[in-house]
Length: 186
Image (cartoon, rainbow, N blue to C red; front, side):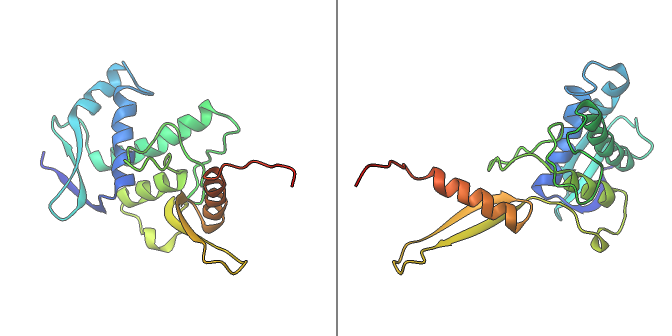
C-alpha cells in the first residue's frame, strides 16, 4: 500500500502524538498483546516532500490506517482517564490537561501533550474542519519583565504554556528561581 497523505501539517507535536500511539501499541498499554503486534509492526508514520503527515501500512493490516491512528489517539486518552480517575483527562477540545500516555519528544522538552492537542490531531486526521473550533494547545510565550523603578533592567523569559495567564505564572516562577535570595538585618 502506498503512503497515505493526510494533508495534515507534520508539526512536531503531531508527530510526537503519532509516535506515542505506535509506542503504546508496542511498549505501553498494549505491550506484548498479540492483537496489536501486527499494527505497530506494519504502520509507519512519516512526512512527504511538502511537509504533510503520511501513514503507511506496509503489510496491509488496516482497512484505513489514518482512521485507525485517529481512533487510537482518542482511545489512549480515554484509557489514561480510566487509569487515573479524577485526573481531569476528559476528552474535550478545550482540555489543557497534559497526558502522560502521549508525550513529546521535543528537544526543548516543554512538557507533555495536552488533551486539546490530541483532540485537534484526531479531528484533523478524521478530515473534520478544525478551523471552526478552539483547542487547548501549548505554545511558546515570551514574557517580558519591566522594572517600574526607573532603572533599565528588563528581562524576557521564554516559557511553554496553554494561555497567557499560565505563561505569566510560569515566567514568574522561572524568574524567581534565577535569583539567590538571602535576608539579613540592616
